[in-house]
Image 1 (cartoon, one colour):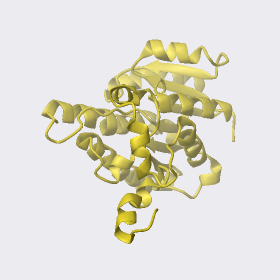
Image 2: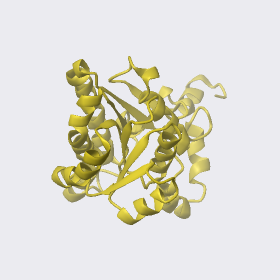
Image 3: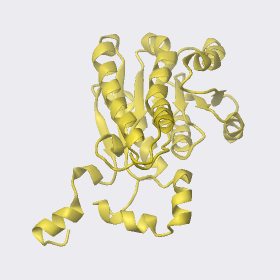
Image 4: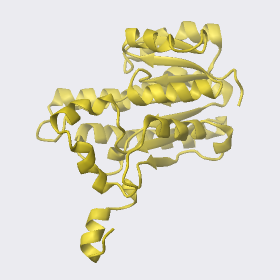
Length: 258
């Protein structure tokens, strides 16, 4: 893979974002790391050699602000060749607890921000015949709580498929990774409240374990590589088998110890 590719990674200061950043830098890309937290980005970039990580901070769902943040960097370093749209968060746990404002915030950060990310990078992606990897969620494939977040992640899958069919003739590819539970700092509040949460969740995962940020990063690296040149519009769960079926229910139906 060319060492000159400029890859935009959003949500770069988060747990999965840091894993993505490390993998793409290790693979030879120059990474344009984006996050709303400029201080966290600066600290993150300091861990790498000068020039390996460029930083841009803005509100991701504000397209004008995002374009303004990226423009000086793409002028100086060339067009964006890959986008890893990773930024996301979940606010409301249930429909009963979802306010209109919370719904809008979840949709903004998990769906609208993905649209803005692609729009801001689109000219460069067309020039480079680049590709897009969205970090979605198994919540976009099944009802697993966080309904506004889930609806947004489901929308992201549909959006990726639209990119694949409309821009495929230009050489663009778009795919979605759907992680299950990933042990990152985002889970800390729940773990503090319920120390057994991870042990309790393991029974639902056929592999009996959870993905790490590095697992997600490896999948993203593959989808963004020439080895995946004929993969577009695909949805890849990285979830320890969670979406393959319900092993707890299967064991009760068959009376076999799955």
